[in-house]
Amino acid sequence: MWIEQMPNWVRKFYPTVLWRKDPTQKTLYLTFDDGPTPDITPWILDQLDQLGIKATFFCIGANAQKHPQLLQEIQQRGHAIGLHGYSHVRGLYKDNPVFMADIEKGNEYVNSHLYRPPHGRLTPKQAKCLSKKYTVVLWDVITRDYDIDLQPQEVEQIALTYTRNGSIIVFHDSAKAKKNMQYAFPRVVKQWLSEGYQFKTLNNKTI
Ligand SMILES: [Zn+2]
Image (cartoon, rainbow, N blue to C red):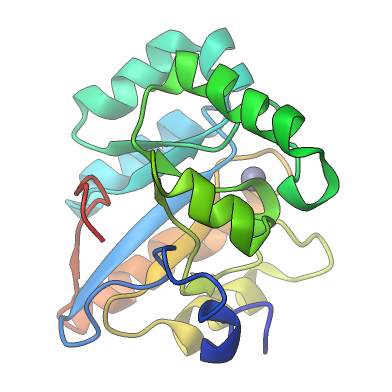
C-alpha cells in the first residue's frame, strides 16, 4: 500500500530527498521519530544495546529543549540525531516562513544536518530549498506503529512485509505508538538479524 511504501513515481517528485539507501546492500536504517520521550526513549536505547545495533532519532525541538540530557544520552550511546522541527508543524499547511522558522528554532536544540518533515509532508519546492542545508530524509517503510486502530501484530507484519535492502524504516518514540512499537520493534529486528541484515545510522552527510 502507498502509506507503508511510497511508489517510485511519487519519489521522483522529490529527487533531493533520501528515501532508501543502497538496494544492493543488506543494510537497514532504523529511525525513531517524535522523541526524546522520557517514558519511552530509554527503553529503546536499552533494547538497541541488547540487540547490538545503532539507530537514528529524529527529535522534536520542543522535546529536546525539555529533555536535553536524554538527547545527549542518545548520542553518547552511539546513535545519530536528526531534526524533526520544533513543534511538529506540517509543511504543506503552513506558510513557508512559518514552516522554515519552526525548523530553524528546532535546530537550536537538536543541532543536526539531517531533517525529516513531520508527517512526511512537504512540497517538492520546500524539499529542494531545505536540501541546500540539510539531508532531507523520508523513508522506505513506515510501520504505522502510531495507528491505534492497528494491532501490534499487524505493525510487525507491515515492517516484515515491506522491508528490503537499504530500507530506511520509521518507528516512533511517542506515547501514541508505544504499545505497537514496543511489541513490533524488537521482534522484527531479531528477525532481520537472523536473516543477516546489518544496521547503520544515517549520520553520513552525503545521500
Ligand atoms: Zn513526527
